Image (cartoon, rainbow, N blue to C red; front, side, top):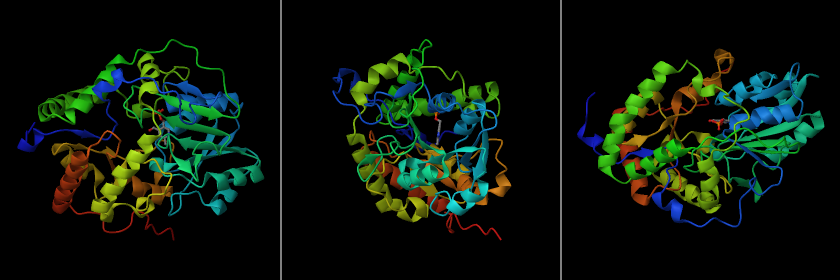
Length: 387
Ligand SMILES: Cc1ncc(COP(=O)(O)O)c(C=O)c1O
């Protein structure tokens, strides 16, 4: 392994880190939506929430759900494991479903429309709720990346019949997948995991973002863990459902009242605006304007070759994320070219609330340095000719 002198630097992770001082904080009295709702259920992961929601609605063999081709993959696996069939639709230029295309996909088997609030940018869920009501089907809002996001003051996830959220994508907690549904299932009853190890990792990430020495050790150890995972896991392990009845870990239950705070959305928006000001020319058009109620999960940039660019950033201490490079294996990739293009060219950078101004300045500097030596995607990601 080649070690660059720039390796001896702080590591800025895409995943929110966990401040050491969190243990000294008092529990908050109030909790944001959906944690303040009686019917809210919390599992270890959002995919468990999806599986349980399907079961609670009696969705299964013979039922079809319309799902976007631009997806993570674990949500699709959860739907399939629940026994339903998925029918893919393409997203339009604005990453929304196209009502005309959806109409063509409709038949008596379709029971639900699944929409994703990409990167914490809200979809027009009110419109889709109305659309679903007219069709007589359910609306499932995937707010895995949109916890704390709102539309005109109304929480994302409160428009549909079902909504799922990933709490650990917004906070440096070990796990957490929330379900809000008009038909809440029984609370998960199996034994929770402790979550100590994951909590420790999030704490280490927090220190590594502040101390170059720790960041350096982190950089040396991480590839070993990644290699170990690669040789021990099968190709699509990241989509695995695991046990769908696994509850929230003990450490997450302890941390949530100390760390969850609506103000995190404000900080994330501020961070996003800062990056937008300096790197706006690299942002896909769909994310170039920040809506008022968005709670950005990450800062997207488009490049010609996201994989190579990511490696360059990593060497300089900025840990981005290939945003959904691999779809669920059931997706006929070549039939959904816009989604394919997005997968190959968009990568996500850190924007979380634990970043300091100096971290953000560093991200800008590193991204500019890396883009000076590689070609930034010159065309919009969505310019796909379907003819
Ligand atoms: C859009 C979307 N939905 C659902 C999930 C599943 O979340 P979890 O990993 O908590 O099961 C993810 C995970 O990345 C996701 O990106």
